[in-house]
Image 1: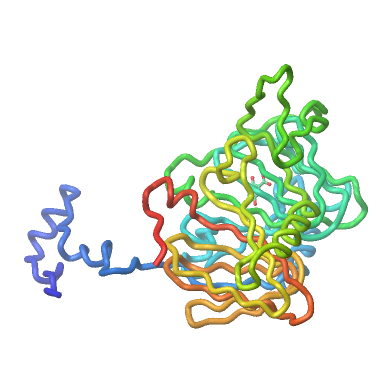
Image 2: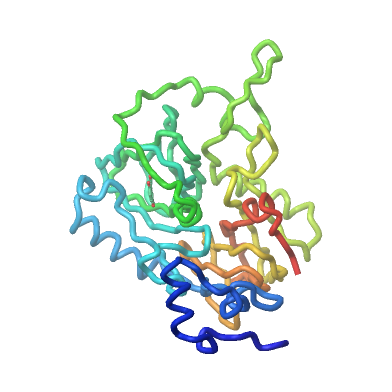
Length: 344
Ligand code: GTQ
């Protein structure tokens, strides 16, 4: 490949003159912004151990009252992007949030989409646009863009969940902001309709009632049972994987990030092809080894890892006797919408 001219090849006076007019020559930077065949990725394969995160998160509970935090979160930041950027990948933000018994994280709404994957503790709930959603371990709770949400806790033990947001993208687009609200009135209407059951939506007098997000809570008991059922009928060498979808549209549950539940049979290894989106693994039950980018992470329960796009990934169950259950998040809905999705 022809080497292109550099900035140093140009007369300093000329470069100064360009700068003063907010002009930049392309050719010294062309290869940098469009490298040959494979993109430059700042995202590094990184793992966060719950065993290490948990004591520091509980300490944050002592150090910072909820009123001083609003959201008491330790962000899982990818060092490849710089910790201050608070991003796991180009479009994914990850945080571990702690709510102590009796605490309340006040109502607000914001442009980034969020989901919560409940890691430990019982008795917490998130109210989303008036719908009170109980948070049980492994449940996936949606708080889509623009919807009011607040977190409360009626139990007696700390509750921790993993927040996944598309904040880095929304921030990059200069569209990230929030609005504070007051405590929401609970409307039982949505809670008590069949909205909360996959594949069933209210249709009074045969009229479909369209809500943009009919399903806001995906109980782990349902996802786990669906995985086990799939494992019984699917070929032994195939990945047992489910996508969290919007039951009204059949599309991904959210617009920008994709969410999946994966079951690894005892001793099973699955090879995921290199794909353009970055991806996150979080262990719900059991343990798994993630191999990517010439690294290997043994993930135990509640551990989390991220892998950059364009890298093949192998996921292996650490146990030969019991299945492992993982939650995954990736950037594929975004890549598909932008026409950038590829699989190699
Ligand atoms: O719970 O609303 O991790 O607004 C970051 C921003 C959680 C939340 C985060 C948020 C929230």
